[in-house]
Image 1 (cartoon, rainbow, N blue to C red):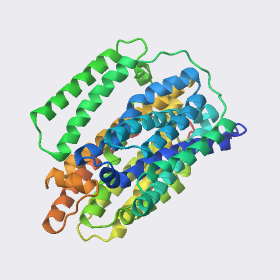
Image 2: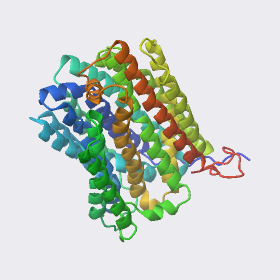
Image 3: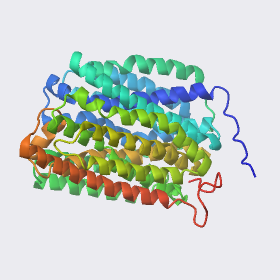
Image 4: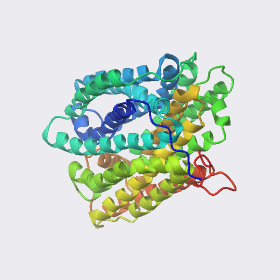
Length: 486
């Protein structure tokens, strides 16, 4: 019996998807471009090596804390309205970052930029779920993932060009015209389609989670530049206590930040955990490779980044097909397969040495691009299919939170693991582009990078096992459109 054709998308859905993908694009640009500009920002603002990293982490931490809450605000006031507000806030934050006069100002403006980024990323998945029928969401999420890959490529190329030929401030100026143009189009083509829900905000839960994550993250960043001290140990303990209190409060509050009832949906928990472990394993790989190419192989930031561009190109090309696989065979199979493909790419990276041909790194990036292109649209489809329609915003925010928590800790964990064979201060200087190694020191540092990559492989396998647990028992995946729908 032939499968029932998927219902057509609403009128204007193509333009709506283009706007949503643009929002993902500018947040991706901001992620990769700031990494390349970090040494120039550090010098321009006369910031210390140990504190300049908060230019990146403050942005990620704010998105992590706000994702579920702004998703909930979208459920209350309208997901499209909050998505459009995200563009406006992001543009203002970018403008102020370009004008920053010292390190505290930069970090503060990055926090504002993170608020805009949270409004964009947390509501984008919900807007797609409102716009497209379930049978077409996979390919929509796949096309949306193209925005991330294109943004990452633009960020890499522009980051290298801007930091080489222009002021680092153009890293932030570039967001202003893109964001304003996207906002103008969004106001014309996006329409509210979901029902609004009366919900409250969990400010106490958000505060507890923020203090817990900040305590542990602050201690981990301290470990990247020095040994474990009593002060850092206290940071770990205090952060863990706040997280424990957060869990206790969330289980008893009437309107929790993390809606525990969503975890009772059979396929929701493994989907969210797969996202967390995938981000924990893979987000820092970009940093590790840049550290290797710049610090050990002595490439410029632009040259180092260009060797990684092929993976993003392939990822952008393959993402729509990954989404279509999720529509046809259910999300669990392509998501699990994508994670296993990513394991192969990490194994390729783990073989690099002080004289490995650069094309090996590019080959690994291509394999990784294929894996990511299969995982992201499929896993997002799984979460949104499992979510009740009234909770699209909350579920999309919860997915973003799970991924961002993994991203935040991935960065610090990777540097600590990679710096196990040389002084951490030197390893950190290499990361921000202020140092390089050669001879036996270079070989020792490569060994440390291998340690971090094998850790990432183990975490990716955990994510794959969680993803595979969603496959319906006793059924052959792929022969029913909804048989493995989450």
